Image 1 (cartoon, rainbow, N blue to C red):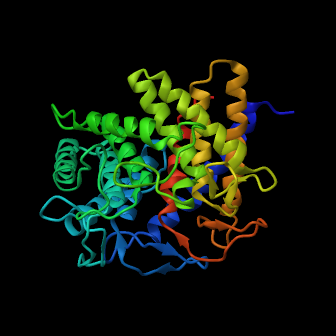
Image 2 (cartoon, rainbow, N blue to C red):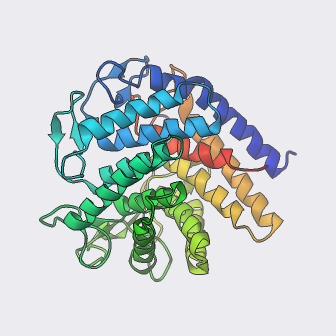
Length: 389
């Protein structure tokens, strides 16, 4: 019987074979709009792109995906893809006030000029990834700093975190804050502008917001929707927990906990992984489902692609902080199972595409593959690539 490391290596090899040979080439040659700029939002399963307004979040995600392609060893035109994305992001999505349109046409006309915290998180995340592999690091760091300042000036919550809109609309959401946290950690890793400690401040603030407000005080789960004072909203909406987000927050809290020497953050991360694996993963299908309530009853038993990638990342994080060889081997075994679960979504007519939604019976919804999922896939691949096994 193969050991945990061999099992994970085998799953990792199959994953990278698909990513390097099929996904990266397709999402650049078909998914990159070389005529008009930016990236296509979707590709149909016959391999044809589908034209739609361009979301800033997707531009940032594709920049990240191809920046990591280069660092992971893909021999395709990663530099060209990153430059292509940056040009579109900075010339057509960035506004004069240093905030971003949420959605534009290929020519750069605003479709949604309103502020969206989620879109800003991924614009900043993409800039951080680009800064790690280009010669204009300081220029990109200065742009990111200016965007952060504009966000703080315009949309800062009076206590902690950010508003969804100005004037305020509710509920406030944990999810975009998670991605601002992710972008802040990415800039800490990439290296900010000279003398700039603002990313540390934002990362610390959101980590504390999570630990003190987002986590259920009795069972350690993480809820999604809040009122203006960071209290869970009433009704079932305030009880929703997403297993994929439990995994994703755990991955981030592990990184921050090690960075700040915070055992409480590591303990919270372990509990989030335990919840998502025990209550939010279907052993029969081998996949993580969409939604639970905070008593761990199932709210949505379907399974999107992205929670599978977060399961991989979280278990690799747990291996990294494992206190015994046995615990580490268990984490590797779970990471391998999560990778095999993800690979099910890649069995498509055109190699390099994916199904986004699995039904309760294990079949997939036949619909175009969304470009937004490549970021999730590459994040998981990047964690697997960093393993020294």
